[in-house]
Length: 235
Ligand code: CA
Image (cartoon, rainbow, N blue to C red; front, side, top):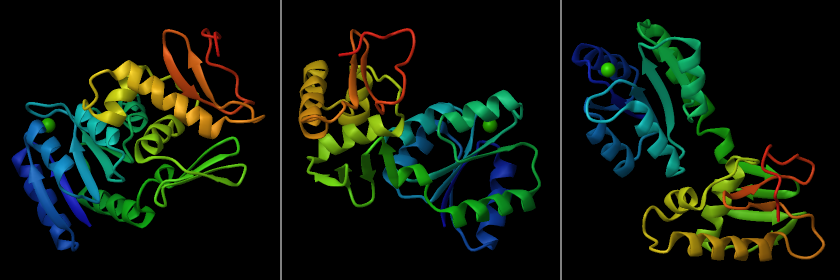
């Protein structure tokens, strides 16, 4: 695997590099948070070993930005904060695994091998909300088995919504995740694309999946799922 080690403790970084290289991996090391994010966003890695406390940029923020790109890169958080709360927060933020320091190198290698066997995160391959199905690698969307043709941006927007059914996304968040700061009039652009998605996905007598929470944003959820309390003003 191509592995990026993001660790500012030089001795630990050296040991990690040596052990992973010995096991046949191609390894890059970066100790500065901002430089590590740049590497993560510009080069392809199969796995990133990510420390949390880093100079210049926190590991959590790096993880957030990596996940915002929807790249299938695996991320294992490495941190001295070994408490359960941090572990849950790390996994909820999109980490694939979590290892508390200090750890035995053998355990790290075993976890890396397990992640390699598992491959890209399963959630990245097929997403389903009710009878709406998205195959991410094929960039194919069907509803009730019927193929729906989407533009690349429409697909990206739908993917963001389908990755977290029931979660309400603000327009500004959708704009950042899908357009990455490229669109000037973010609210109108997001509204227009949502309208286009609705025409394609919720057309006809089908129960609607895309919902508006007034003054909040948009969510996708199956008709059986209850709306998020306390906001029930759905349209
Ligand atoms: Ca550190």
